[in-house]
Image (cartoon, rainbow, N blue to C red; front, side, top):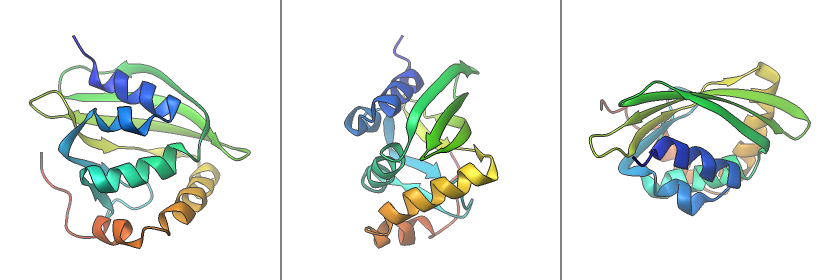
Length: 141
């Protein structure tokens, strides 16, 4: 059986945004780890975000998946510049087996700050993406 989360993880490590996008449902959402109010929706905006995120990380490593069925989690380690960062990423799958929602949980504070500066500067080139992410509540899957 095709494991869409494993494909997402492999694509993120390789910084292969095209492959990563094939794992997402058309109406996919990514909840910002910086502000729970910001939700990036749809392939166009998530592509811009993923390009900024995975282009900013070094040494990304994911550990085994936890869970089965429609909800999965995985813990990863990475660096932004010289600062170490860890992530506990939660994936929610839709009925077709594609990723519907991604919820990253980054720590520690110093790593999260470095991440925000690195990714924020890249997203500043696309102000519409951030504005759309601020609109409306998180959709219910």
